[in-house]
Length: 255
Image (cartoon, rainbow, N blue to C red; front, top):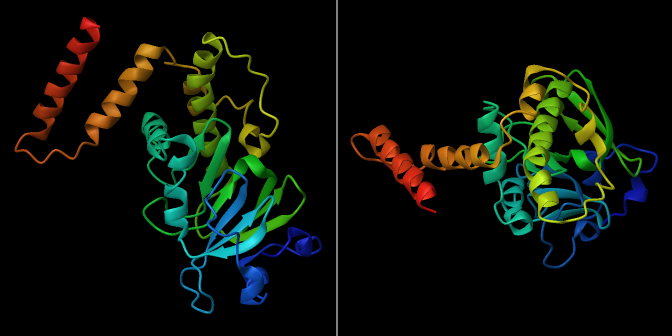
């Protein structure tokens, strides 16, 4: 592992990390991805080292792991039990089709390109204080004051961060009232980073954050998403989906 203090006076990039000897880049034994990762950087095409991902971690520093970034992100289910399913439901609600981030309350990991079906770099927006774009490069300043630079091949960085924040705010808007209603004393989050950057935005997407948060509507939203993604291979899949919806509707009335 390379301590992040080694990057106090220079940017954290793949090239700068991979300048270190392989022995120094070995990570903790049996490391499991957690929400303290500043970034998950894809190096699967670089065959110089025995590793597919570079992890930039708040506590452990920078190190290599054999798992790909795709595998690492898909293992977030070990932290929130549902993995990417929640993010996909929220993205479906807002009709966001590309660059779907991982969202769990105030934790947000944003893909730099692509999504869960391919290897890409991921940035933990909840651990970033600010960001800026310079043509096809993105710069993030962590809450600890380090600069992470990644290649940003396509799109507008502010727009991408905005959409990720929308999903975050919707997630909080859905679950926070339910948690409070259950008698839990919520004191707020001690770290929010960039996920609150657009809290005062009044665009159509943000207006929708405060709509349709009734538990019945939320339940229907999840049910519809699950049914629409069942992958039914019958002759008339849409008719079969209607059957599922009618059955679930009767079941809810019964209980």
